Image 1 (cartoon, rainbow, N blue to C red):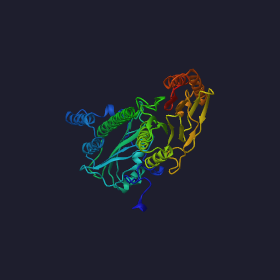
Image 2 (cartoon, rainbow, N blue to C red; image 1 turned 180 degrees about the vertical axis):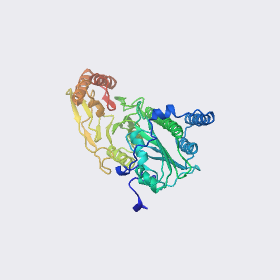
Image 3 (cartoon, rainbow, N blue to C red; image 1 turned 45 degrees about the vertical axis):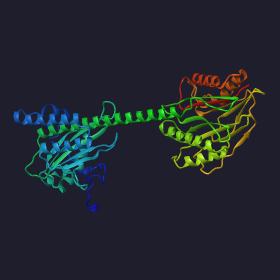
Image 4 (cartoon, rainbow, N blue to C red; image 1 turned 180 degrees about the horizontal axis):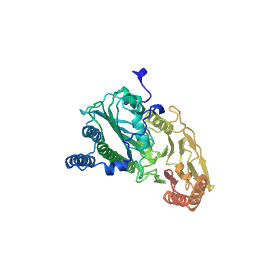
Length: 471
């Protein structure tokens, strides 16, 4: 079959868009071609009561179907069937661009019995291309070899009459940005398409555009509703997993705070008790923000709490969580995590998996030190053995601050190249520690300072968690 394909023939589905016709085979402007306005306003009604009554009946039925139908495929089948029956054609095709600016391809193709056409069904690509490009409705009769200017496919298919009208679908705004066409043809020598047929045919095409626009709006509305529902669900899940009180060892107090960039956050914080009685504070930050990262952190948080109940080795806990997440994360997704373990005696250990956003205030020296990351983020290098870092013990008045990089990378409200930065966070922490403020007051001061700096703008989630050994 492939060897016999001419440049202006098309195969349905196998060639999703009409090929560019050979200029030598393009149809010349037809004498029956009229402007769309002329077709619609002058030729739709003939003055014959019986004929005009049938026209009105067809259009009213089309309007009713467009208004009531919720199934676009079923509605477009009806439009093509109606186009065939009202014009006494043998075949009908509906072409529509899949996206804005694309070339129209076959959306529906049916015969006079209401059956889908074979995938190898061909049509006059030259006439369809001419109508789509010019925006001018056309109908023509083919009498013989003298009509070669209509395109070789017209002759090969032995077509006797062809009719095609354009239409456009608006995705946004008032201008059509998705082009389409409605096309019928016949081999019957006795059938001749008239200007009246063309007018009714063009009116039907306009209802096709309305149907597609309505279906698109309905689809967009449903998608928006589904998205809002999923976001609301993710938000509720996260709220239920955020601890209301951070219960730590006697002699310590802790506080956590977060502000998501969207409904759901890709950050989390929590406190759990290890099997040996020590307190484990954790703060994680997944790539991105929204529903996807929210599900990742929910899984990580649940796994961390579970392993903390049965193990007392911080590095082993992180290792197991890493193995769990590696099986569920897509490529390019990862989770940074800092696990801080403190004992009643002030013992202080950390496991930092690519996080690096942890500061310690030492009351005895009134100084702030930054803890370094000792391993890759979870999900980046499955099997990596994360190490437990033993830190100098916490003395009365010392504080540990964990935060997500959304806070340190908050951009200035007026100059986006200026970031809030770790230095400003350290200054606030040092001042709060010197004043003897508790974790709640520290988080409040930091959040207010960051919001003032950024002018309220947030491009990422902000999360804070502070621990103090009471004086």
